[in-house]
Length: 221
Image (cartoon, rainbow, N blue to C red; front, side):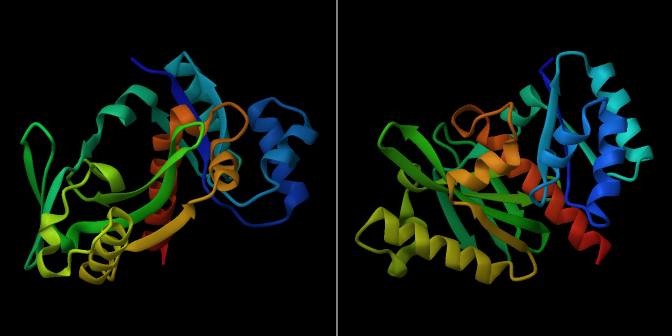
């Protein structure tokens, strides 16, 4: 069982009132609550080793008018499919991973596309795209780990150009899906992950929080 990560999605209303409600629900100072709400959500508020404690605080946040999100760190890490090969066939995205496992996801089921950049070393960064679809694991496309044969005649001479073209094709095939690229910057990654987690070890938490928030916004529209 992994660590529980407690976050809130975006919100609206009077900042002073929201800060007071957050402080009361979390048992923190008003200053800390104001700092947590200074930027738009989603944002990680706290981490817990005890699932029951996380659930209790989440209930208090919901009662105070917030939209809490509780994630299991271990489950988040395992709910990903690292794509190696792909084909965009008609109404379906077909993908395979390095060991050869295969998945087929209808474009109509894709709800959110999250684009960003991950840090691999002191001077090494890699663009990625996550595809969040109903009834499927998160499909993770990493620029340098992909075989771009699925682009066929549209294949470009560099991985960067191929990755950009792949993103364009996926957005075109799933125009209904929400698209977010704020995680291209470290500042935005830190804003989502708060003060307890770092992009180097918990970037998948930031992408999942963004996807959950975007899905809720679209469902409420």
